[in-house]
Length: 328
Image 1: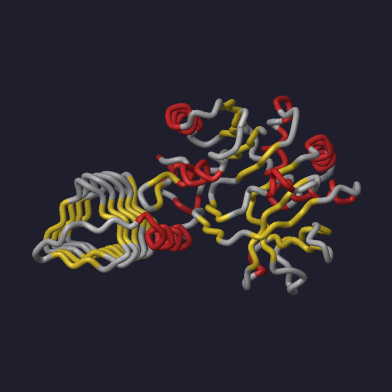
Image 2: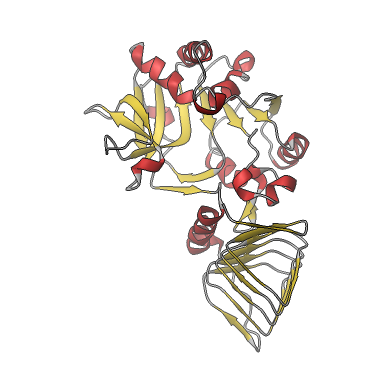
């Protein structure tokens, strides 16, 4: 099986951090988002990663070649023309069943269905209450896709499409992508992969919709912090030894090499190695490596590596390379 990983996006909702850090390499609970995704496919015989790059492509390629053992091929998406355009760039190297993973989300999914299902493809989905925010999958009585509706006004379905797919019938998938690319583009001049799935269904192909236990977005500040909290509560927490003047409110992840003095940390905080926090309060936030806080307050924010905050308060923001921006 080959795995297509589209990584061309700029991650504008995490600016200014994503000027320097590619979106899939943004840290949550002390690890790049992409690491968690790669963990989920570790038990499969992945022949090759087909990585669709764009923004900060050299950083992405360097990280993948350094940290993952799976052979990888990199293809640049020079024109950001949507998800169908991105996947189409992998076409010359796909010669069998393929998995497609958009790595700005984490998921708890039963991937064993890949080995047991006789469907032409599998689309994983999460039942949500706020269905108006998502593309939702409408299924038949047996759980096979009938159509995908983007941001419906009425609850035609609550099964949100999460961006995780396995396609056994790869030929019809790429026929569908070719069909989509031959039509007028959609909103923003983009071509959508979901329209290729609709083409497959219209050709009589069976796409099974499978539920996930959890789905955690890492694409914007508030959901990134929610994902951090989930990870801290499910195994990634790390509490330092008790120290005078230091109050810890779990869950937290305080990595080795962090210095704490006269401060309150937590809940839902990750602080990476080399950072120093003195006379400060931090809650519901992510602090990178070598951050310096002195008599500061940080709430619901993401602070990049090496940033210095003294005698100031930051909330609902992203800070990196000396630039501070309100969260989007």
